Length: 91
Image (tube, rainbow, N blue to C red; front, side, top):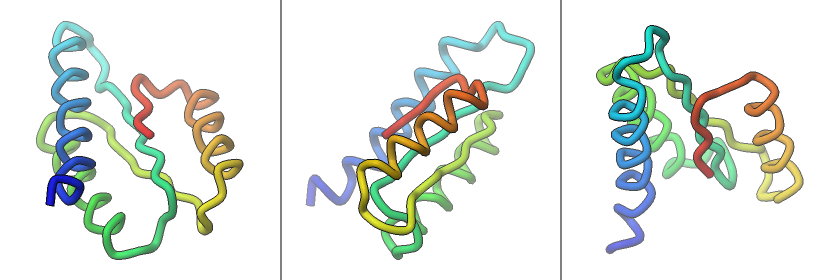
């Protein structure tokens, strides 16, 4: 049961830390979450939560997940987020 709540709690903790650390910044912080694989019900629900909480907290939050469970595709997604200059990356 702990595993069921671990990822959303981690995401919420990262969002909270971001908001606390950037409260004085003029821009909206941007956050990208990279998951193991996109398009499955668990991560679809997680994406909805990330988007909703991002809007509620004033954070541009997105979730990215490769179409297959390939670590190389996750690395590519992380590199893409770095190139875009996001403020926070969660894996």
